[in-house]
Length: 94
Image 1 (spheres, rainbow, N blue to C red):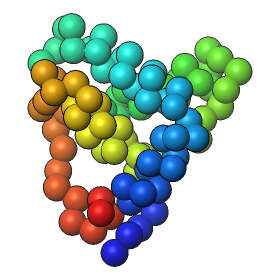
Image 2 (cartoon, helix red, strand yellow; image 1 turned 45 degrees about the horizontal axis):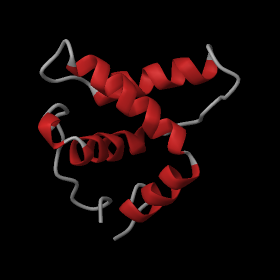
Image 3 (cartoon, rainbow, N blue to C red; image 1 turned 30 degrees about the vertical axis):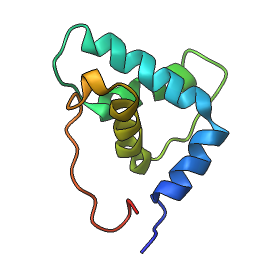
Image 4 (cartoon, rainbow, N blue to C red; image 1 turned 120 degrees about the vertical axis):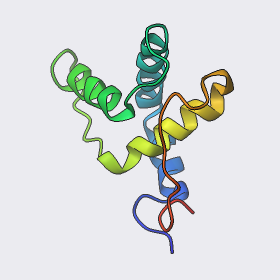
């Protein structure tokens, strides 16, 4: 079953908005200098703040993408594997 939060839909969303991952990675790496693990949701809230308050962009980023960004970050930064706690998705992460 492929739902709204499927890998294919994330890939499409990520390709349309590469700046979101860039901010996610920036803030995650900054957090990693102080913490051994952190909240991907907190990082997403920081991105929302940056885009809605401190910039002219106003991203509507659904919470359903957060785990995808966390997984992408750890995949691209294997030395930080485990920085985000993730659960196995049973239906929508296909």
